[in-house]
Image 1 (cartoon, rainbow, N blue to C red):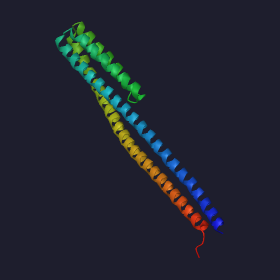
Image 2 (image 1 turned 120 degrees about the vertical axis):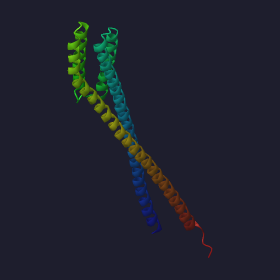
Image 3 (image 1 turned 90 degrees about the vertical axis):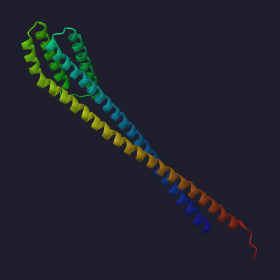
Image 4 (image 1 turned 90 degrees about the horizontal axis):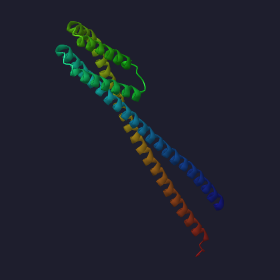
Length: 216
């Protein structure tokens, strides 16, 4: 009967050990998955922030181009033309890099930028031939579309910053969950070891007591 009881106890411990190991493995696997999720969200946030930075640069350069163009129409200073062209090229470059980083152009900003560059070149051409009035009118006609482009760039940058904030929050949540899962796995593993020690010690004591000679 004692052997039968010991056998059942051993079988129970074996089943419990298997279940415990499965639980520990599952917890560690979930922890690793959460860590990977956290890193993925961090990468996503970095991409969003890079896009926002590039858009901000494009917006700054575009605004500078507009200010220089206005000055050129007023003064006719030919030295301003290379500056206008340089800041315009930088704005287009930054915008293109931002679109490439995000992988989409839902606001059709590149097309708007191209139209603005063409209109800008038209204003310069009119002023170069000395038609100040026509250049001023063309500049005035350009302003609404140009301001709309700047507003679109600002909205795009803000949306990317907001997306980055959400991704960072998700990364922090995933990181916290990964830590708790790792701790839980460690606790379960420690409990399993303790239970195994208690079982082995108890088993040894029972065997010792059964095998001890009677003193009566």
